[in-house]
Image: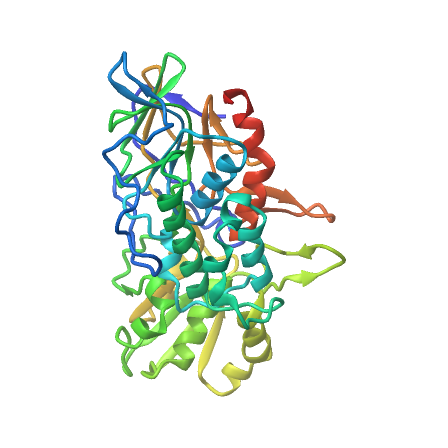
Length: 422
């Protein structure tokens, strides 16, 4: 599933979305940058399982002077947590878990974002795993009183993931070694994966996350980072009453950014929404959801139906919507130059991956099997950077992103990868 070359740089693959599949072109980020991390709430880190010591029960290859583990999991966001808990549930007692912060991944950037996932699915993320269910009373206490069939603030999910991560670090030190580190290189030699920090493992799970995509427009228009546009407390300090602010896209993130601008205590002079496709809404069918991963859900969907699709915001002169379907990227940039500031909500692309070599040859443009996560022998990808491909009863294919979806996918596939190592 991987393309081998002896030399080359790491290319980021954009996750599919209606916007990005429409032919606007792909922007590659070829610079080696480290993923952003953020703070989150949870238990104190005092006494946690940290880098630099071997844990009882975790195998060490004394003859070679190297730490040897059955599995390495790179990334400690929600999907990384799902992978680690699934491995523990299926009897793995030798796990190296690597992340710079162990702070719930990019999820903790979105504490002011309303979820498009129902509360009961966050609860199910915990209770479906025996490992995580041990800590359910702590992890789920913030959901007490929440309607299980409605969404909630993602701040609750951040607390949940951080609490569960800290509990594993405290309670499972004999099975999981946590290394606060950034993996820069992975090399496959003699049937094992070698990590640049010196460890040797039988299998590696890359759960390294993604970042908002952005077109390098060279237009002179100031960009407002999507993460900040989704945070009302930050957005107010980034716009002025003299600004014309454009929002590019018609996704859940685009509509949330649009709503935040409309409700901002500092009201821009003008707000323009540039879109290629009409708004798409998730439709609840019998035991499944049409447009589950591409359609609007929750309170953002309710707002969009009332304010955007009805033309209410346009009638009031608050928002101007401009359809750019069929235009080239250069033609769209010409439209964007009407703005002083621009928010791009056009999907996500992978964080930069470690350099990966197999018997001396570098993997460039890393590909994976979206039905089981396989990248190469003993190397697998999960989470938003390597999402599961699903097919609904109507034959529509989507990439499944969300906490419960990450857990469901991990539990369906990881046992088949790992069973021969037990």
